[in-house]
Length: 146
Image 1 (cartoon, rainbow, N blue to C red):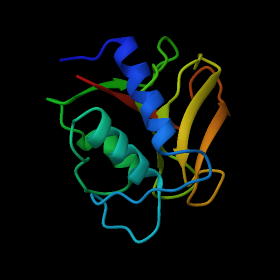
Image 2 (cartoon, rainbow, N blue to C red; image 1 turned 45 degrees about the vertical axis):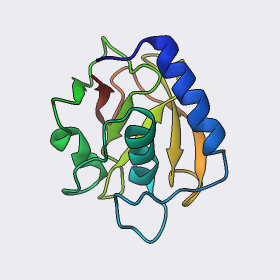
Image 3 (cartoon, one colour; image 1 turned 90 degrees about the horizontal axis):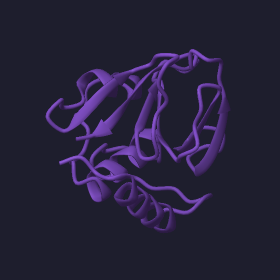
Image 4 (cartoon, rainbow, N blue to C red; image 1 turned 180 degrees about the horizontal axis):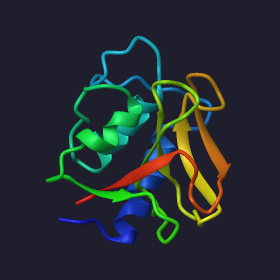
């Protein structure tokens, strides 16, 4: 069952209240000893969307390819579509592991607004405003809960 926009907004508001800016979270799913981007996405997916943790194969940027299609709609990056609030955005980055974050609403074809961990603030939760070209350079795509 897909969530309505109102349901996602309510869930996202509860999520951001429980996991505030500047904090950090380590998911039991990853087995990491420090907070990284996948931990925050796992908490969102497991506790708020009730989809369970992501399968642990590869790096953050592999999440798009290995996400369970029964639980997630995979939307490939295109200049014709943008992620919606609550979508999990997956990207290649200058780091070999890639990056994964959660759209916080208001993204356009030129700007991606996200809730991240371990992006600009090492191991901490931050809101990011990524200025991207119309092609969302390096973004592989995003996952939307079914």
